[in-house]
Length: 136
Image (cartoon, rainbow, N blue to C red; front, side, top):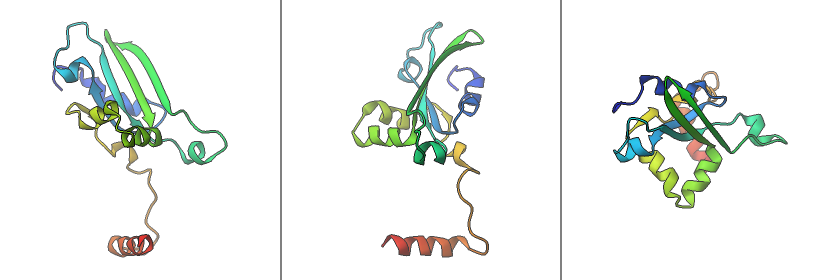
């Protein structure tokens, strides 16, 4: 991935909350990394229901900086709700993350297997139809 360490793809999955997506930002994205440039990872993550709907809300932003194999990694992730608020407020910082071609964790990868299952006997098309009917 453009001279970036191969282990970057492992980092989002090693965090305490599942990633919605993660991308590379900073000097690597802008095309002028130096030999001693850190790697800036940015993204959004999903909080568990208990930390969204419970009495104690989970962290909106997590920041972590560490060194791995001689490379400094700077990771900043936002809870999906905060990320959406920033995006709706026309925040260029989060738009840059969404449009970055340097994708470490593709959108939705961390969500697979965590979303609700279809009710027994429900077909995909019937479920979509009933959901659509309820929205109208």
